[in-house]
Amino acid sequence: MNGRHFAARIYQSVFYLAAGLIYTAVLMRTILLYRDSPVIGQVLGLLALFLILFLAEMVVVKRGSPWFYIYLIVQTILVSLLIFTPEFEEYDYFSLLFAILGMQVMQRISINRGVLWIMIFLTLIGYKFIRFEEPLEGVTRLLLFGSIIVFLASYSLATRRAEEETSQSQSLKQQLQEANRQLEQYADTQMKLSVIHERQRLARELHDSVTQTIFSMTLTTQSALLLLDKNPNRIGSQCERLNQLAQSAMVEMQTLISELGPGQVAESGLTTALRQLIASQQFSEGLAVSLDVEGELELPPREAQGLFRIVQEALNNIVKHANTRNASLHLHLDEPLWIEIVDDGQGFDTQQALDGGHVGLAGMRERAEEIGWEITIHSAPGKGTHIRVEKKHPIEERV
Image 1 (cartoon, rainbow, N blue to C red):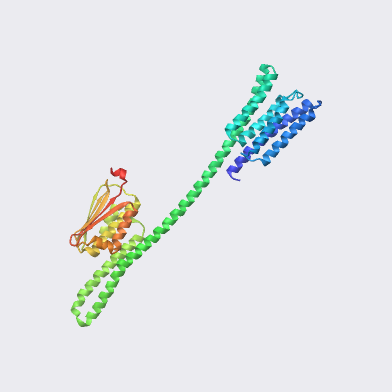
Image 2: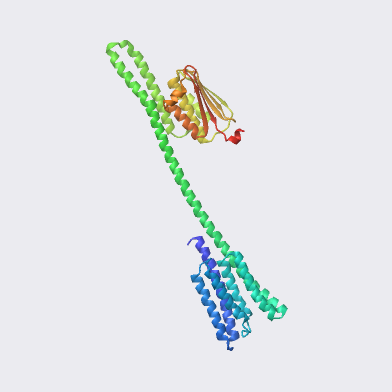
């Protein structure tokens, strides 16, 4: 049994106990007072009818049902008969039956209407007590029996509110659980999509770079074999070309393999990871990369990892295509945040490269977009290449 049902059981049990004790007290008092009176049959008949209607209402009528008002009117008439019938000389304790009705009222209908019915009950017993008793005694009885009615009605209202709050809490809990389940499903879907996206990117890069390099190695090897008999003097240049292609393929494979490994950036930070990258001899020995760092702002791991991959791809492209011995890397780790990679190589037509579906450039743009940065690439044949990656900011922060 969950907490909601247990609490409802407790409230219901207290209600039945209070109603049962009140009715039993009224019944016993009636028997003691009217056992020798000729009207005992009438009194017991009215009490029996009250009990039958009470039990029937608890079983048949639901909260908010219009039938409850009919039941309430009939029960009010029955209690009024017990109080106002002249032959029933001892009548004051019959007003306790209004306490049972008051508890039902606060459980079954709206609070405003319930308060109105409580006022009707108090008016009925107040009129009887004050009109037909001594003023002081009538007021005393009204305060005594009225306070019991109000107290039990208030308790019933409090239990109703507690039950409603418990129900709302359970409903909110279920909604939160459902939202959490949907978020977990969304996160799982996003993770799967990220894995698929990364696999597709690696497949494109393998096809665009490593596969083409190996294909060029195959052609160079075949050319060297043909020259072995015809022109042996040219075999040296072919072997040198073959060695360059092998080194390029090794660099490309190391780059792809490093992307599949654990994130070194998260462990050491972006600046340290780039220093290690430059010093690792991963690039051609003929390329000198200078690193300039301004500021000490620590970037979130996801952004730092993405920027590291962008720089790695940019330097790899310089090794393969720029035909230069010099490149510079500038990190500005302070507001505004940006990174620049510059080389003085042969450059290229950026529009033509993008239209041609160059995987390296497209991959850098995708990575920048994923981490909320913006990349701009400026290059032209014979004028080198300038790449700038800058942190995006909302419009209100730019003003």
